[in-house]
Length: 387
Picture 1: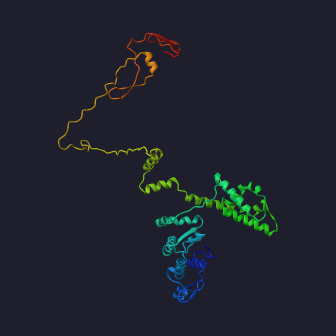
Picture 2 (picture 1 turned 180 degrees about the vertical axis):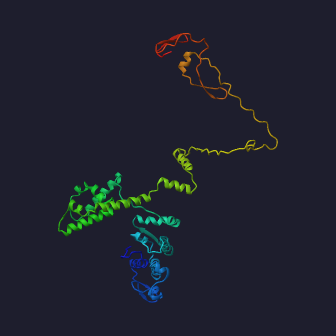
Picture 3 (picture 1 turned 90 degrees about the horizontal axis):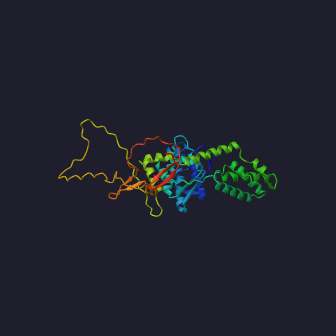
């Protein structure tokens, strides 16, 4: 789609270009009319030789539009590709961007033909207009090669080698491939920029009557660093616009009424899912208790018993095994290494604590950091620990 040196997008020019692409250089009314004629039916109808109303505001030509709609249906067109579609956004004053999107939607509905918009990241402005644009449109991103990704580095080198193999001149491909970071720098990882660069250098070499494409010639026709920086900033901004950050995802959850706690619960269930059974551990989140203030003497809300009441169940007594002394010899205690004891009746687990038999308090002073003998049953063992 060409601008034709116009400051704004012209729909009549679009109709004419599309009709010519279909081979429709004329359309039938009652007589044969040239589509490049200066005066059409709408222009003759308006006073002063001009189009009135909304058609004039949009540079529209309804008669040409009807001809295009009829031609697409008659020729069985299934898709319309609009290259450089960012020119659709260049509108005159008084026109909203949503009106341009409605025009495209109307063309699609009437003709039943899919319109494919191909262009720069400026087209991203169309998806934020309304929910209809987001629902009906499908974004397909063709990213540039990223220098920080090793697979992209190998792919870029392969593209560079393929393009050098198509050059109709003598080329030291091995030497130029060693300079692939320079080619990436001056093309910002875009194959289109790299191809145009090589075409300019090859054309200049052929114009000078030379038969060898050198690195010096390529450096001469490389884009300036300032221009590469501007393109890189624009590409990075577009890539950031496409990248859905975590903060924006949290905002979407809030709009849908999905709390962050629910998101964490779903993530925990997904992480604990086992491949064998497919079951996930269920985790319940305890809701925060609301603090309520009660007046003195006011009864707390509770359910009153209705009808005949049954005898309340007796409160379970404490485990009888709690505090029970188990007689073990020092040798048995040392060999077993007991830490827990289980009640034989209810199965409760209790911590075992070693307590010696009662004896009078120690009269002598405590000896520090000396070896001593410890009696265990009928045997004596030496210990290096302090008593």
